[in-house]
Length: 141
Image 1 (cartoon, helix red, strand yellow):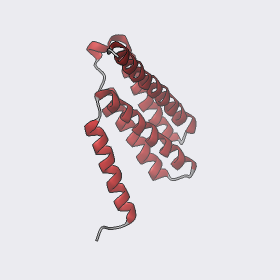
Image 2 (cartoon, helix red, strand yellow; image 1 turned 90 degrees about the horizontal axis):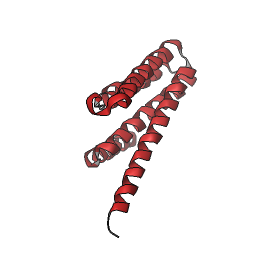
Image 3 (cartoon, one colour; image 1 turned 135 degrees about the vertical axis):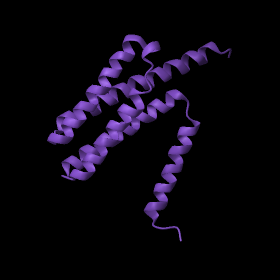
Image 4 (cartoon, one colour; image 1 turned 120 degrees about the vertical axis):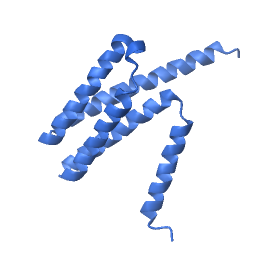
């Protein structure tokens, strides 16, 4: 009647993600994009190690999609100035490295992108912590 337990688990996971997205502020949405890109790139690395070429390609494509059509298009080049321009170029660089990793089965290029994404995610998360701390300090207590 309900299908396999795997299908049910996937349905619950989708609902959880959709609920998280609908309830998230813009800052949290960017964190979710970083998380998705890191998870997909990590899955691509596992597939690469296990010589699962189709899975590797799918996961690298998913990572590129998140970087280009999520993180990159969220940049406001007018308001963000030089920082936004540098991030724009970095996202292009990451997509190029991912294509290279996919075509040449190059784990070092894939790991480089994972490291870049992880660093950016950490920095972005730190902005939220600092913003929240500043807002809390400004409120009368």
